[in-house]
Length: 81
Image (cartoon, rainbow, N blue to C red; front, side, top):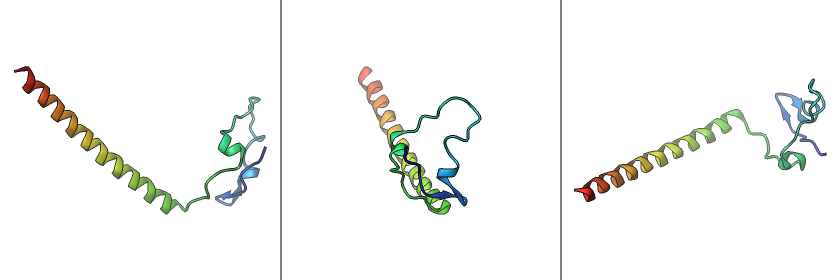
């Protein structure tokens, strides 16, 4: 099995993963990890900015959905009268 070759906080991922666990269970890796198809490491500030963008996008979508639900409820109440 191929292991990731990049580093996190100066620790090489191939040294810090499978085989060093104290449990006797074997660890099952997702196919992307097993085939060494991981995205490159990101700087923490870049990753945080990406997460903030995603969060803002999700908040906007939730607001739109809440508005649509409110309109649907209002239309249903209007139709029942």
